[in-house]
Amino acid sequence: MTAPRAELRKLLTLPSLALTALLTLAGTALLAYAYAAAGQRSGLGPVGYAQAGFLVFGALAAASEHQGGDQIRTTLLAMPRRLPLYGAKTLTLTVVALPFAAAVAATSAVPAGEAGRVPAATAYLTLTALLAAAAGTLVRRAEAAVVLLLAGYFVAFPLLRDRWGAALPDTAALDPPRGAVACLVWTVGAVLVAGAAFHRRDP
Image (cartoon, rainbow, N blue to C red):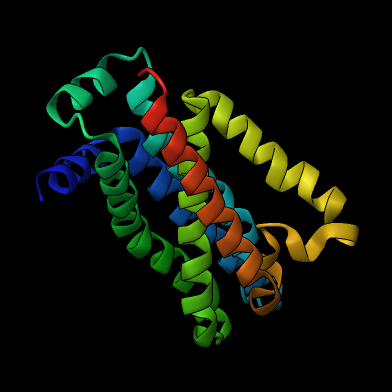
């Protein structure tokens, strides 16, 4: 349990993650309030915007350790078995992202009287953070990973939605039953590819 404990300590003491979580939760609350003030049922509407926070959250969690290369080298000296280490990183991020996702999902859905949609939204946002972390592991630069992810989710995917909507990872934010499988497949695939790269590449 040494590796998960060490990874958990890193995530919980990373200021950029705490700031991202607070801003995402506050933004979701403001959007839910705006929907209510306009007399509209927000449902999962704010989740479509809140996913940006989870993309940043996952990318920062994975890529921050690679910035400059010093911290990841120290981690690998302490825990040289790379695949178990990557597994610990993925598990720890899941543990941290899950309650964050649940809070954001509840903030979006409960005021609209749609509490039943909270579990699906929680799962989607958690998977989004894991997919973003895989991208961060592959790119190894937080800024570049965030730009690529935001461009994909908010520019490329909307343009491709008419033709490839059911196969895109963000479809679950709009239609959870239809997009859940695509989101899961994308996330698992990205995690496996990132794990293989982490195992083989130099720090």
